[in-house]
Image (cartoon, rainbow, N blue to C red; front, side):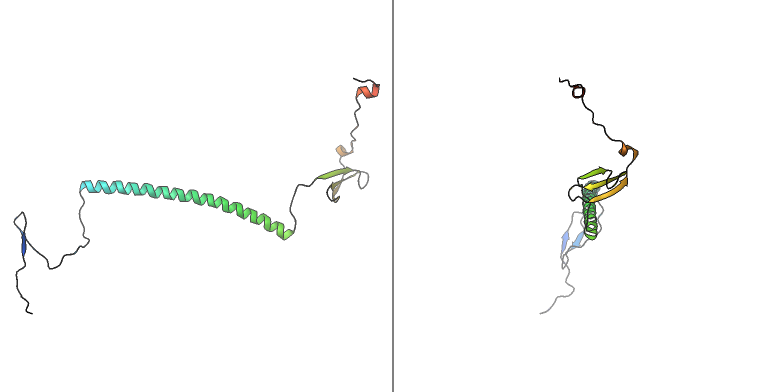
Amino acid sequence: MTKKINNPKPTVPVPEEQEIVIPDKEYNQSLRVNLTDHELTERARDMASEQNKLDQEKSDKKRSASEYGSRIKSIEASITKLAYTVSTGHELREVRCGMFYDTPEKGKKSLIRLDTKEVVSVEEMSSTDRQLALPIESAEKTNGESE
């Protein structure tokens, strides 16, 4: 096979009567191209739209993070309370109690759990505690009258 050397390349006529040589191989390559005013306006609109999307996503992320943050804090508080309960072996609950005056001795008052009869505390009676409530009888009973 012989190869022709110095073979002129075919040319393509263009409107301005310039000749362009047809290449041996064609391919695309990224090159700088100046945009028209219309293209710049389109890109500006696209950029503004994308910025709005980004702002919305960031806002959603913050809201979501905040919601999860408060849920996490609530769970952590629950765990802390349970850990204290487990480590101490007790917890605070509302328990029905009774106050007994002059118990265990005159001038003292005792707070007693009504479920277990356990003495919760014994204190000195205050002056208010010492005043006995007098039963008030209706005038009818004392006078023997009825309504």
